[in-house]
Image 1: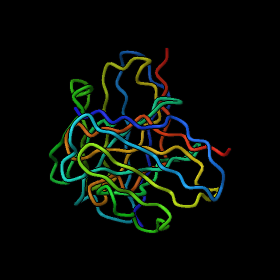
Image 2 (image 1 turned 90 degrees about the vertical axis):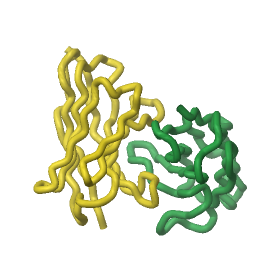
Image 3 (image 1 turned 30 degrees about the vertical axis):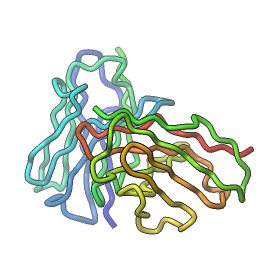
Image 4 (image 1 turned 120 degrees about the vertical axis):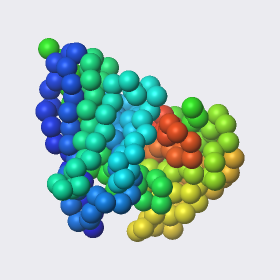
Length: 116
Length: 108
């Protein structure tokens, strides 16, 4: 059974870069689409983007200028970088793998707070 | 971008009752690429339905999805206590993928 686990700093200062990593176990990262989704406290879900195992990416236009998703197959990990963060980027960040095209497998999520 | 509007915002029902949740898209969703997720407090969302009407692995048959074009429905035939949660629809037919704002199903 594939499992995903997010890791990274829980606190980021305004204007800095938010960096998270998702470690995949129980399956290879060399297939499927690998997504990042976020959820501000008490609010709904927002898709950030995905990376395909080939390395091609697709980002939400609302974040595109600030987002980079990358993949490290040797470590079975993929990562999210979000630059120039503000308080509006405070959220629980989830990584997820597709199943049947939808988000079939999710990490437990990690709360990132943007504050000085 | 496709905007998904879920209704109602909150649905109060009793165990054993039938729940009907709606998801309306601002434009037609390609190939009925609509999914439904359940999220319980403090947990990640979990996939219930994909392709508008196919149940994900291990999902009980009291959960069913239907619809096409711009109108989609999640039905829970007989509510169990563990079904009270927030439900989100999502379209993955067009980029950017988008989610509805959620329907909270709570115990009456």
